[in-house]
Each structure stands twice: as structure tokens, then as C-alpha cells.
Image (cartoon, rainbow, N blue to C red):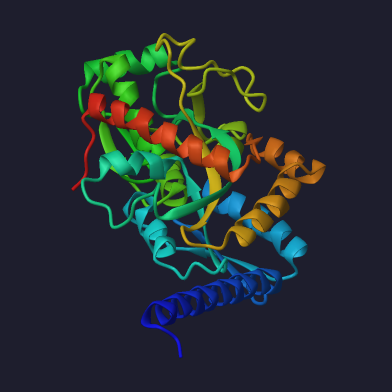
Length: 333
């Protein structure tokens, strides 16, 4: 006959054994799930309309990822609210590796621009890899008399608040670049937010707006055809695709160096095995000769880093842009 003390000890051992068994089964189940993944199509959410850089990159990456995983990758557009609607959809999706976000630098800016967001970009996502860095270009409609940045600033100063610039939405990279341009140039412009590069470029070509600071991808062909005039690039170095176009830094706005990165993320609780698999496959794609050639054609610089490096990039950019947003006094309810 066991004493109460021995009975208690026996129950503790039994409980510990049961817990250990349950943990083993859980780990085994997780490993089996990861090995079976993917068993059906994957959705890659683009938080902008079709036609912009985010959409272009998503389709190139999605096509190659489908080949390597053996399952279709469906690019789905969910635009609105400066790319935050699409991000919120992915943040709340089931963390099973079947719903991914084509995120961008815009999301690190939105954290400071929007007073209330339904998600936390650093806590609610699992970074996978940064796909590419795409420089932005200051372009104007050819009917604008300014032939360079100096002339554009002079024109803006002569008509405060009359010249307009379009962006991909409130809190996006283009919005912040425009605000920085105003501050460093000592001018006042009228900001016109769009849902994405597609409708923005249409209005820019039609003369409904004066200028934009969009990424090079949607405007490069229009520049080459003479339908848009490039005045400057926003990064510190000139672009191989536009070697004769000076930087804003060279044009008198010293220290101006802002570009747009794009990367892929999953919901925060996505199994680590799936995140690792995705990173491995994506980095192979990004480092391939074919992918790099496609990026060169659209003026993009391939990256392909680790989840940890992307997480650090997000953290650092969130802190950096918080300061810029505060200085530029940019906010959205």
C-alpha cells in the first residue's frame, strides 16, 4: 500500500511523462505538417492594384516559387489605405504557410504615419526575405516647364501649394519622399494619394498631377519614350538604367537618400520549418542569373537576405522613418 507522499510522487511522474509524450507528439505532428507543405496553392497578397512595382515583383517571384515548390502561387491584389489593408489581411490569416504578403518599406513608414493600425508590423509577421531594392525617381509631365530640380523648386516657390505630387497612398514611401522634398527644398506642394502606381501613372501622363516620386519600374518605359521627364533619382547613387539623370543629392538637396525595398512575409506564428523552406527557395530564385537579369531590366537591385536580417532591416527602418515622419509632420487618422 502506497503512502500519500509516494502517491503524490507517482502522480507527478505520470503527469510529467504525459506532458513529455504530448510534446513529442506535437513536435512530430509539426514536423510532419512541414514536410507535407505545400499541399495546395499559396496566396501571395499584393497590397496595391495591379501594374505597380509590388505587383510586378510578386508575379516574377510567384512564377518561379511555384516551380520550385510544385504548387501554384496565386498573386492576389488587396489594395487600400496605403498598403495597410492587405497587410492586415495577412496578419490575421491562418499561419500555415498558405498566405504570404509582398510587403514593402511602406509598412515600416505606416507604423508612424497612421495613428491606429489593426496590426503590429514587427510583432504580427514572420519576415522571410527581402526580394529587391527599387530606387524612386522624380518625374514630371512633359508640359511642366521645369527641366531640372532647381527650376522645379523655383516654379514651386512661385506658386505655393499649386504644384501636385501623386503617391501610392498616405504613409507610403512616395508620400514620405514628397514630404522630405518639400522640407529640404523649402517648398509647399499638394499631395494627391492614389491606391497604387497604375492609376497614379495614368493621371501623371494625362497631366492631372504635376509630378511623382514613384519607383522606377512603372515609369522607366514612359521616360524612355519621352512621355515623362525624369529630373532626379532619390537614392544617393545614379541608376544604371538612367545614367544621365542626377540624384537629388547632386541637385542640391544634400543627404537625400531614400529608396523602396520589397520583401515577403508570413503571419507571425507560421512554423519555423516553413519559413526556413521559403527562405531557402526564394534566395535561390533571387540569386539566379535569370532573376537578376529581370531585375536589371526594371531597375531593381536583388537582395535575398535571411529572416533575421530582414527583421533587423524592418526594425531599423521603423525607427528611422519615425523620426522623419515626426520632422515632416505627416499623419493620418
